[in-house]
Image (tube, rainbow, N blue to C red; front, side, top):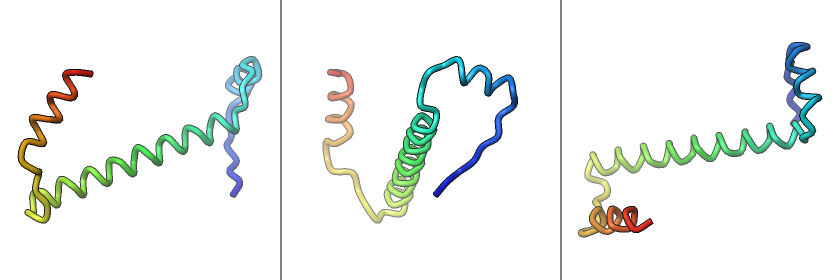
Length: 72
């Protein structure tokens, strides 16, 4: 797939001053955003499943997670 974007002349000039591979930069930004959205979707599904009683949090999990977070 190929995507084309339009930028104004000023932005294009500034982009030329910075020596990076803009295509790769944009591909990586898209990958990161997709990963973020997938994580959000998974978290929302998990929360809904917990609310509906389809899943339950194992005993001691919350305390263990908080402890690990503090140690980091």
